[in-house]
Structures are given as C-alpha cells and as structure tokens.
Image 1: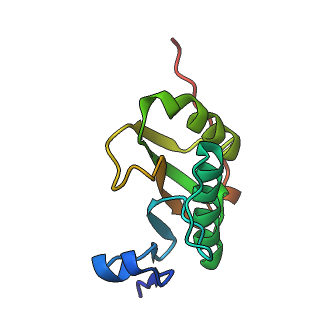
Image 2 (image 1 turned 45 degrees about the vertical axis):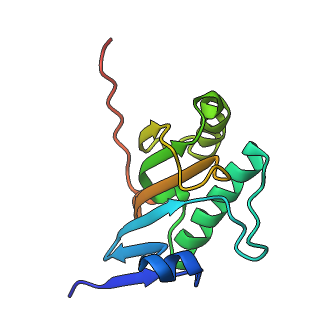
Length: 140
C-alpha cells in the first residue's frame, strides 16, 4: 500500500497557502521551495552566505525527520534573487552537494520578497545516498 507522509513546520505561510514543507510518497521525497528563515527566531539573515546555509539547515532538518539526508537528494532547483549572487551561492551548493551531484537547475527569478536572496527546492529518494552509483561521462 502506498504511504504519503506530509511534514509541516507549523509556519503561518504553510497554513495560509495549504502546503507542506515536505511530502514523502513511499521513498520519494519532495521538499518545497525553502527560504533561509530560522525556524525558532523566524529571522532571515541578511548575509547571503548565512542565508544560504540556513536554507540548507532547514532542508536537512526536514529530510532527517523522514529518515533521509542530503545524500539522498537526486534533483535540486536553485532560485537566486540577484544574478550577481550566483557565484557565491553556487560555491556553497558545490560544498553541500560535493560527491552527491544531483541534477540541478539554477535560475534568477524574482522571489516572494526582496529579503529572500536564495531559495532551494529538492527532490530526494530515501536510500539513494547508499545506492550503488554508476558514473557515465560523455565525450566532449
């Protein structure tokens, strides 16, 4: 039987917009677009690096709640408010996803507020982090 698990943080945003921070369908995990708001203080760091690290902390907490981790991420979608911030954000993405190497999309659309400098959405498969990896490199 298929099991759907919905994780909420209890935020007002989730309640008003009727969405879950994370939905897990069997072993597939879908994490909603996540900003760098600290879950306790509700503050968003102004510093780009700190905001990006908080985004990852929020995602890692959600994944851990369902027995998964960043190692299970198979796809990421990165939303960066200012094109000038791409190099900084992608350096952090590269650190966090080093050796995981998910499929990835990076774009610079307007975000819901100018206070959000970066947001990240991920798809994971619980167990992918321990799966056998076959690497294929295309000639260039």
